[in-house]
Amino acid sequence: MHDPRQNAQHILDQNAITLERLWITYWGEGGIASILELDAYVHEALRPHPFELDLIFWAIEELQHP
Image 1 (cartoon, one colour):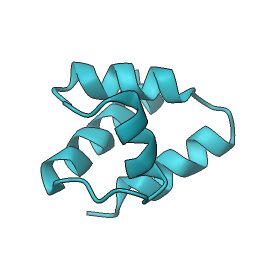
Image 2: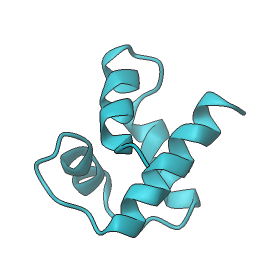
Image 3: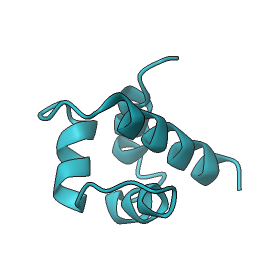
C-alpha cells in the first residue's frame, strides 16, 4: 500500500480538508494519536505504528469518498 501520509499532506496543503477533520475521522476509525501526534505523523516527524497508517488511509478514503 502507498504511504497515506503523502496523500494526507497533499489534501491538507490543498485545503481540501482540515487537520481537525482528518483527526476526527481518524479517531472515529479507532486511532489513538492526539491531533498533534497525527500532525507529526502526516509530516513524517514521528513514525507511527503500521496500523496507525492503515487508520490514516481509511480516514482519507472516508473523507474523499463519503
